[in-house]
Amino acid sequence: MLNLKIYTFAHKKIHGGKMSKENKIKTVFEPIYMLSYKPSSGCEFFEVLENNGNYYARCKVIDSLITKSKVNKCENYWKDCPYRRLSLKSQRGIKEL
Image 1: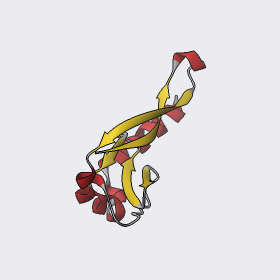
Image 2: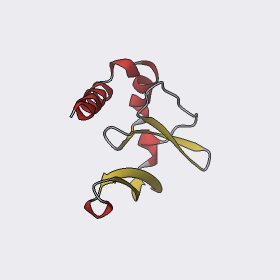
Image 3: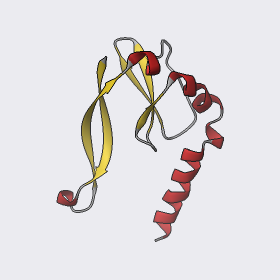
């Protein structure tokens, strides 16, 4: 098991309703998430974390690591991702308010 530091954004009332960066430590079952190569995606919500020469892919929309069996979809089919579409639609709705 590995403990990875993952930074997430959370809404906090104490900061006047502004987004604040929080530091979470999550325990990761490495065989499911660990990649031996650095993945890449055109998705703006795709993030790569590195630890000791190993890589982990993270989706900012669902605030979760991506299993290595699903990383291929983020690399190649990110334009069709339902999480990405939902997030983009949500962001547009917020801007219109």
